[in-house]
Length: 472
Image (tube, rainbow, N blue to C red; front, side):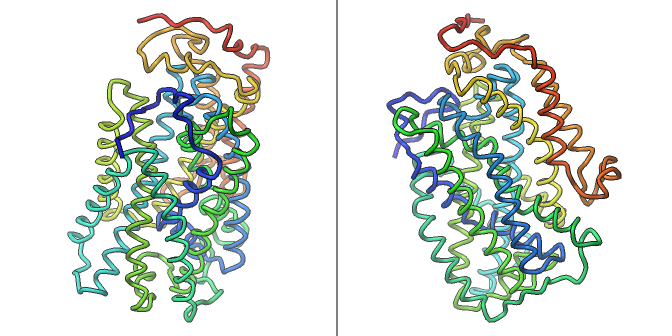
């Protein structure tokens, strides 16, 4: 299979051969990994029992899908990734906001997947072969997983799609066996005696955001990586939308609910990987090892692929392959730092809440723009920055739409002022009763400011009326 040559340029119609079923496959197969499973552990680690954990994950996921899935339709119309597509609202240079947001999201989730997958693999090998469970062995495992991940990410979308189709079957089987393996130790009681935030509802809402909502929101810049390969002339927006919803729903709920189930069975409180391996019957260690390896490579590969695209968008002179290798090195460095310096629960919760607060207003502005232009974009004008040119209908002021960028800044700022983490609590928490409402407040603030600033601004003209960019 040849290495994909496409970066963030527009995918020609003849190469857009994927369909809604492929979207379901890639969203299911890529998410059946420990990097997603571990989010199901968060609610029990916060002090919630079985049903509060399940309701928090399910409701949070449904809300997140309703917000995130429409973004898949943007790249269906533009033929490029979502960060580049957001240039229609932010400007062809302002779209760098989306590239940075996407890079940070993918970086965090890639590092988390390699971290948890590597820890479980070392723990399983320790029980199977007597391998010392030390910092050195974990560092080696992180490096091996990262190297395997780079291969899939460099070869690109087609290989990742094939991997996802295999993983969607294989991982479901391995997780089904896991349900049986952990059944004797299962209990509906939380593994810790106290609620993380002191009472039920604030803790439940935190779980709904950190474990449920965060899953779909992680895809706000990723969905376009797949739908740009779907032809809008062959597949309707409705089918693509519902395929995205279904793929996100089953792709996130299956692993996260498995994570809740195993966390309760393993009585995983402050840590997940160690208790998961210790509670596993000996005969399940090999399937667990296979799930940790294959799932981590599949999920991290997809995230790393997106990171390569975002870095390619930030540095147009870099090829996608070089950008992917650089992104992999940075992600691996974060794994080493996190594994040896941070507490898993605090690190996960903090980065999810912070990135959600930053990314939500960008997604809101992009969606408002999609509705206003009725899905009509000038695909050629979106590529001005990549060609190092100037002009076009999305040039605005020096390549930046000040109204959209300012709206994102205000929305992200409000979100950060309303977030609560283990090392920082925003001043707006005093107005929300200590409940983290950063997702809602950041989205509302960004959307309202953008609507107000652009209320009298006519939408960009139809592609036929677009100005031709000129060489810089």
